[in-house]
Structures are given as structure tokens and as C-alpha cells.
Length: 312
Image (cartoon, rainbow, N blue to C red; front, side, top):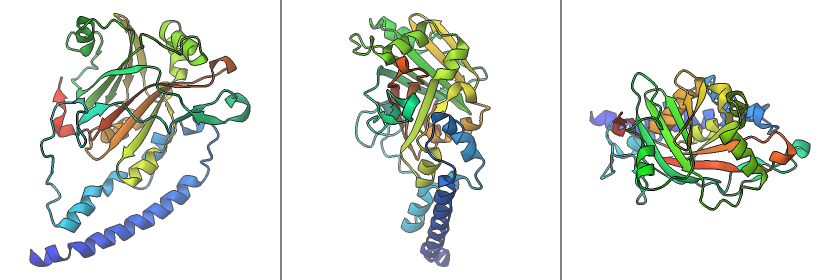
């Protein structure tokens, strides 16, 4: 055992060398044919990642830390982290959610149809109200229609603002995020406001599916994961079966990613315990009077852990 323990630094160095070679190859292959031409070229980023010859989770960062400090790879320093999935309350809080950093997110600019130029987004249009992460039962849970969901509690507290709820079903779990329209919205008469009103009240499912984009970002995590996820939006309706339900002043979007290529990856990002993940919802502008785009709503999931996810 002593000899094996003494050999750990050498094995760790070899692993690092392998990863550095992968990194160089990965960056070269990533640059080929990936010029930033349009959102459409990035819609299949998750599928592209699925087809790579390696799995970014094969070399988790904990492997290197454990090699160097000699600790058991299965040990976890969770400390006093709260097991409930609540809003972040202190630095270092894990398995929680909060507002996401949005200042680096770029969206289609006012002249995008002519010059394909993207510009930094303004602040999210909607206020983040709530997020929930739970183990999925056999059937897809419609959150707004359930008495056990948060919407009845929000209404009971006197908050009757219009809600947008995104409900993601990925392997093993569901992530639900709720945003509310601000009482004073400075964007109502602007292009992004008019587009949102049409999306919320008037569009059919087909048009909504062509508009709603999700931009996942890895704020903190293994560099392979950051590189693979990238920074391009995914048009959800093209990747996953998506349905829309209006209940009690809220529009719920049920996104079934369980069998989609992106579902497995999103599940690992949300519950693997290694990553801080930002999710940004955007409505795609197709005409001049729908531009510039603006982030609709954002959320950040901090080190979500499957071991801490509650059952529905």
C-alpha cells in the first residue's frame, strides 16, 4: 500500500500530460469550421459534444486533487452545506441557486440581419423568483398545475405578477425555474417587450418553438466541460419535445430532454457536483422590429448534487 501511495504523484503527472495533449487536440478541432456565423450553427452543440471521442467527465478535477493530497477519491468535503435546494445564502454555498452573471452574454444586435453582429445584452427582463430541483417520478410533473408546486405559494403571498416557468426534465431529475414580470417594466414598449408579449399571449407552439433559446454557460468547472459546452444558444424546440401550458397567470414551458442528446449532458452539469452552471433564456428575433434581443431570464445553479436532490 505504501508503494502504491508513493506512486500517486507520478500517476497524477502522467494523467496531466495526457489531458494536456487532449486539450491541444480539442482546441484545434474545436476551431475547425466553428466560425461564429449564426445561432443556427450552434444549435447542435450538445449533439456535437456527444459525438466527441472522449467524455469530459472522464477526468474530473477531483481526480487530480485526490492524487496530490493522497485522499480517497470517494471522499467528499461537503462540510455544512445545506441539502435543500434553496437560494444561495453565503459564499461557498453549494447545491443552491441564485441570479446568474449576465454581463458577458451577447445577443443579436439591432442590425444583426444585415451585419450578423452580436452585442452585450442588457439586464434580464424578468425577475428570478424561484428554482427547484427534484427527482422525477415516472410521469412529467407539470409544476404550475400541481398543488405541491411553488406557484400556489407565490399567489398565497400576494404576488400576482405574470410568471414564466421553464420546466426541464432530464434523466433522473427535473429543474424548474420561475421568473416574474416586474411591476415596472422599462421594456414594454421596446422590441424585446413586444416580442415577449406575443410569445406569452399570442404565438402558437410552432412559433414559440422557433423562438425560445437556452444559453447554458459553465461559470466554474473543469476546463474540458467549459470548452465543450461553449457559449452558443440552443433552440430548445428543435432539440426536445416542448409543450406550453397557461395556468393562473403563468406560462409554463415543459421541456422533455430525457431522451434528447443534450439531456444527459445537462443532467451531469446540474447534478454532478463539480460545476457552477448559468442558464439564460432568450427569445430569438427574426425581424428588424424584434431586435436587438435581450436576455429574458437567467438562473445560476451552484454545484448541484444528485445525492442531495429530493424526491417529488
